[in-house]
Image 1 (tube, rainbow over the protein chains, first blue to last red):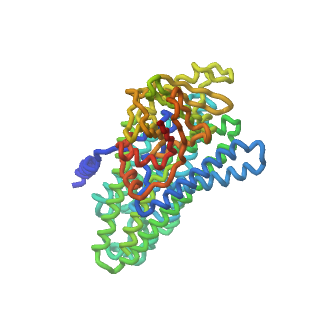
Image 2 (image 1 turned 90 degrees about the horizontal axis):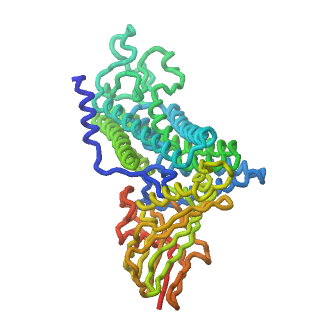
Image 3 (image 1 turned 180 degrees about the vertical axis):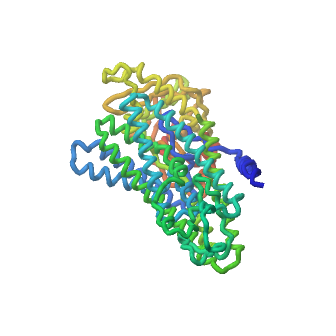
Length: 345
Length: 214
């Protein structure tokens, strides 16, 4: 039946393809808005989102103002850093900073919290780096127009959504169709007969029974992150991004329109270093917001799993069902945005 | 416990809702042109972009590197601007006595770069010239909030060739009620031209220019 996994996953993906698409074009042809561009002014959190939007506007205007005044005032640099950071914190609440993708990825893959935070920071930093590279090359090396840079970031946006969709496919595949144990250490001779779960140190959660799902240790992004090996060295595995690189890149290769505008503005004022500082501190703010949300999600899952210990396997199945929903969510999101971005291109 | 988890999913999902903020800040001046019979024939926009967006927009346009941006150097960008605005209905909503007035494609457009600020000038002819009626409203507004329009206080609106007695005033925006907000939120993101009733509802978020003629 293994041979049917790939076509089945693709069939699920095809079924998930929605009819609607979010076209993210741009009113002036330059500078594409982040994400869908729709305004969520309704619902129970309406007041909060209005307030967040207002804060973003204030911080964005103030930080561009501070940039303009940096040569005249010594305090302006400090203001620039503080404002950029504050802007990043609030801006990550809006579309386009990997909250949904990273949070869903963490919930589904079962990565431990420290790595989840590290992944959030890495994604934000990669996003800043992308903006810096695109603008530096575009402005200082090639001296291209805003239109060309917009086309470049639009292309990166398409790539980003394609990678997000891919991540969704893999997550869905492993959660929905992955079954049985296929551990990395299968080849190791284990003197203990069968698994003795009581002696394992599972990172953050217990298992009531054998009902957890392991993905094939195939090296791709969605390894479950568990370590069943009795080998203590494996438990102290250093933080590497090997598995999560796809999720990080998927989020990070699309630069933020605000960061691009601020950088070009800074360069036009001959203040490259100030622009760099601003974008890096924006990324720091973004990282904090995204990792906070991701932490909340992972903690909630941990609590849920801990509380379900000793209860029916039905609840564990329900949690797995939610994980499948999350994986499908990433896939649908990636496909919808990909369709829209291609349509708008 | 499960309720908490579901609630968390909702919060995370809700947190991905847009709370977008403007990336372009425009100081706008508007002009309505009348013909000899007192009908409105065109709307002229003068939109000055903020410093940061200006710097971004003019990047790489100085082809001959003389430190100045000539009309020829700016014209391709002006065309891109105006072509892109078409999908957004030029952010313009003109109504005469409550009836929406359709516009044609811009008859002229150009960009001006001066003192670090880029300004877009363009004229939207009214498809069929129409009398202003008792009250005409002009609203210039981006419901997706990527562009923020701000009107220059005492110079927001000029009436050119208007019949005697016509007066124009600028009214700042006021709060939207819940019902309208949820209607706006229900619009799919790729639908830039709002249905007329919603465009009207959105108008209360925008600055409004009101022209009253006897």
